[in-house]
Image (cartoon, rainbow, N blue to C red):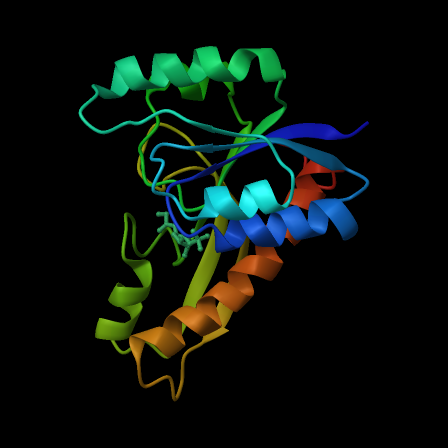
Length: 194
Ligand code: GAR
């Protein structure tokens, strides 16, 4: 049975694009169907990419709305899609308890650092400024904290010799794009029991 998933984005959507590619022709093709791409801003460039893939998109603007009010609207939007999982891919909003409870252990996120070492946004800037020799991409379940949920997979990125922030991001995103789909496959085929 294919898992029905929605991908949540706020911006560029390169992780979303990698997942859509794998869902249409690759390692996710037999285990999931992306039935919705959701964004909290219509400025999210990834919406255009999703449309090119022929995937339905929806936007609810979060700006100026209280978190609870916004998240209740999102839940109402999602309900008819009968989703099995929410896959966050650069979704820059903290989810309130009502969403976490509704999709308990069914919300997955990718983070550009080791969540034990660094939480929040700008993970690559942190690695670059600290001149780290390596950083660790993390895929994790989402709970009510910021980047505190159970870790599903991690993969190291070698940053030695990366002299610009752009290079750090490029190396990291290459790993993100591979690791996310591989981990999702493990979850959707129950190789990981969560
Ligand atoms: C990715 O690097 C992702 O790991 C990060 O946002 C970027 C989104 O890029 N997420 C976080 O920092 C979450 N704390 P994308 O829109 O091209 O996938």
